[in-house]
Length: 193
Image (cartoon, rainbow, N blue to C red; front, side):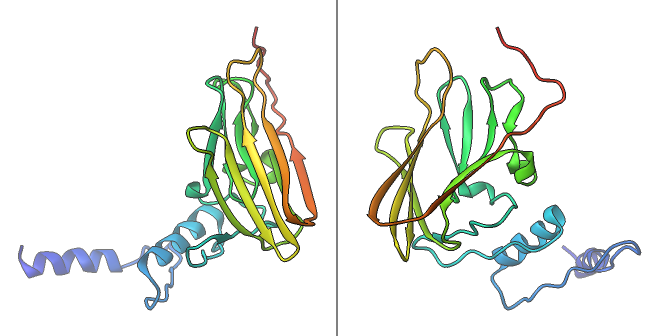
């Protein structure tokens, strides 16, 4: 490919339009972090909190913004499904079926769009989670300075109706917990027979 062609392409990319705001990035940081920050600015209007090194995640429990999509896990009962965040928040659920209106939709906005969050009162717990072997039972472990607690989420299959089971199980010490429930109101609810 001729050098003049590439030079022309790069010159086109470098010239911002008159109505564009410049995006400044510290090029000494990893490229993935820079791209994530730019995307967060486009989507949310502000940068998101960077991720800590692996080996457990310190989640922003008090944040009202949705998590990154990879921080959600799926639970379901073959009739509907929910997305559960690392922070203990169900941020997406169409109820009682997949084609129903969403009663939790914080994934697309903020808590006012509906969510059910159960988490420690500690604002910066260490979090790990996994599905129990061979199941869709999600176990989220919160480690705090005061102890350890597990949040166990699942949706029973083959029931007459759809339901979400959320269990809080103390593992060590005493951990103060909090629960926030905001249901999304819809202007045109559907009836299912």
